[in-house]
Length: 423
Image (cartoon, rainbow, N blue to C red):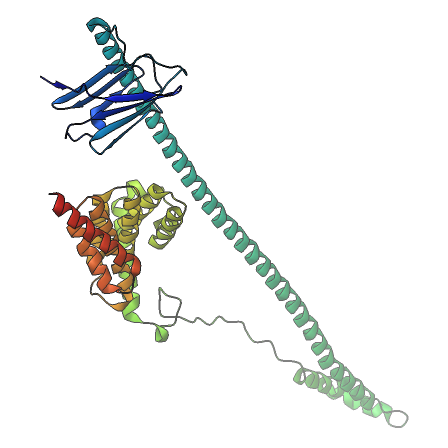
C-alpha cells in the first residue's frame, strides 16, 4: 500500500499557484511527476501524492523544481481568479477515476502529437540537408563545367591564332620563293641576250659565217647547252623522320623521374581502380572527380564547415571505401560522429586513425593529438571517464603547452573523484 503525502503548503496569486511538497527523505526525479490541466500526481515509492485541482492550469508552462528535500511547483492558471482551495472538495471516487483516466488519455495524445511533430521536424531536417547537399553538388558541377567551357574557349582561340600564323607564314614563304626565282631567272635572260648579240656579225663575211654556223648548228646548240647547264636543280624530295620515345605514364623525362615513388603511386592507383571495379554496381553513376579521395575529402571538409555533418560523414565514407589507408579520413569522420552523437563510431574511427599514424613522428603529432582528444571526448560522453582521461593525458604528452586540453583533463579528474565519492 502506498503512503499518502498529506503534508503540503500552498499559496496563490491571481495568475499562479505555488505548491511545496516535502519528500520525507525520498529521492525524486522528473519521471516521478505527472501533471495535466486539472490532475497532479507525484509517485515516489512508497510515497504517493494525488490532487484534483480546483480549476484548470496551463500544464505546458507550469514548472516543478526538486531541491532541499522538497518539490516546488509553479502552476499557472488558465483563467485569472482566486481559488477557494487547492483541490476540489466534493471529488468522489467516480469523478476522481474519470479525471485520472481523462488526464492519462490527454497525456498520451499529447505525447503522440509531440512524437509526430518530432518525426515531421526530423524529416524536414533530412529534406533540408538533402537539398543543401544537392545545391552544393550542383554549384560544384556548374563551376567545373564553367571551367571546362573557359578552357575550351581558350584552347579554341589559341588554335585559331596558330592557324592564322601558319597561314601568314606560308603566304610569306611563297612570296619569297617567287622573288628568289625571279632574281635567278633575270641573269639568265641577260646572258642569253649577250650571247645572241655576239653571234650576229654585221657587214663582211656574214654569209660565210652564217653557212658555217648552219652546217654545224653552232649558235643554237651552244646556247641550248649553256642554258641547260645554268638551269636550277630539282627540289629535294619530302620525307618523314620518325622519332620514337620510351613509353612513360608520367610527363617528366625518365632521367628526371623517381622510380620508387612513381611505382608506389601507380600501385595505389591500381588498387583504387580494383576497389572501384569490385563494387561497380554502386559506383557506376559517379563522375571521374567523385572517385578521387582528395576531392571527396575537400567536399567533406566544406560540408562540415557549413554544419552539414551527415553529408560530410557520407563523403568521408565514400573516400574510405576508395582508400582505407589515409588516417585523416578516419580522423575527420570521427569529428562528424561526435557531432552526430555516434559515440561508439567516433571511438572506432579515432582508434583506426591512431593505428595508421604509426610510427609516431613529428610530422603526425597534430593528427595524433586530435585523435586522442576526439576519442577521449567520446569516452567522457559515454561516462567512461577513466578511459577518456587516459586519452587526454596522451594528448598532453604530445602537446604539453595546450591549456585547453589541460583544463579538460582537470575537469575529468574532478568528475572521477566525484563519482568515486558518490559511490
